Length: 175
Figure 1 (cartoon, helix red, strand yellow):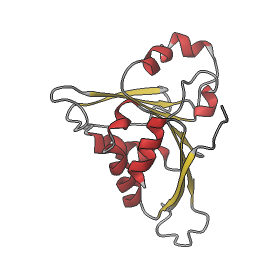
Figure 2: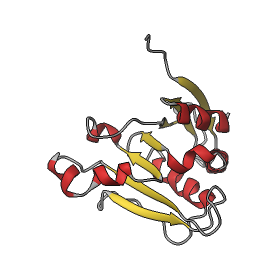
Figure 3: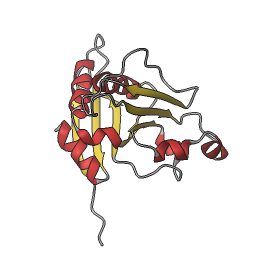
Figure 4: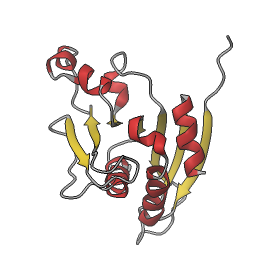
């Protein structure tokens, strides 16, 4: 079997409202309920901002904080329209920026979390390379170098790459 290049979408989020709109379109796709999304970008690129918008669109209420120090933050979307009535969507937001000890993978129970149903959002996936299950959608976010408006520095260039059939469904939802 010949490997094919992943399906790709490229775009620009001129303002944070564009980030929110992208997240809302993604949240309407049933495949997101059991997907693994890898978020790529430097510090301050907007990965956590995107996650906050996606979680809100999925029905997560309350404080949504970055898992930078905790490595993983669990969330539950009780009123998620993608789930049957009364059933919550489990979501895990991982940040592997400080991940350096492979033993931590087993000790923290990450294998079990990734094997369980629900949405997994992974920042800094390259730091857990070799441990992660297949990624459905890679999302690359970078500040837009062509942005000339210092009043609005939230412009981002975005590339999404579908790696699985679920990723292709997610990609179709945002196009």
